[in-house]
Image (cartoon, rainbow, N blue to C red; front, side):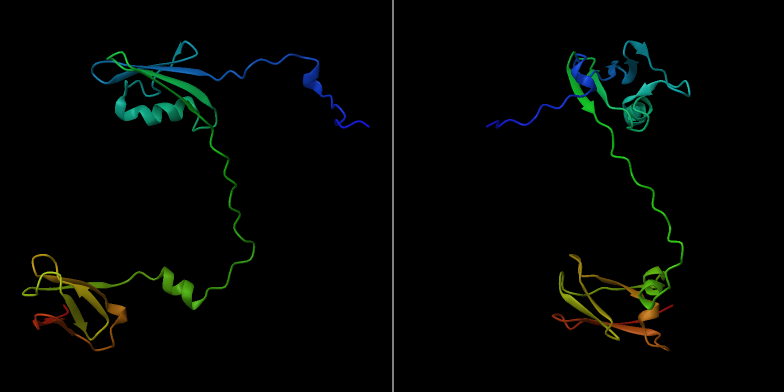
Length: 182
């Protein structure tokens, strides 16, 4: 009885394959923070002629890896002699989102989600720090800050028609503030 699987042959059986070689990126950091980059021993200059710096390390790697479509081995040599090595792998390709051929009918929920709120800020002082402050016409609640002030944002579309004043009521202090919406 044969317990082993049959041997499959392929095109790689006839040829010897070695280790996978990635492009080698060497980045040297000068004392002033400028960077010098080489790819497999060839200098890699900035496309706009401006020197690479620590702040442009990300764009430098994006340029070398063609926005992460090519995996590379990166070695960074600091001016103090320390060396860091890493492998930047490729990103998984993203599938393009194809818009539906027939438009999706709009619902009340999608209209509401798309709506931009019209906000009004109402503030008042004299509350106990951290106390619960009721907002009347009761559309929401808020807390007083550490300094005893209460602040709330009101979506004007949530208020009943004709409402032009709000009350802020401290649940602990009993502080009552009447504010006109302007």
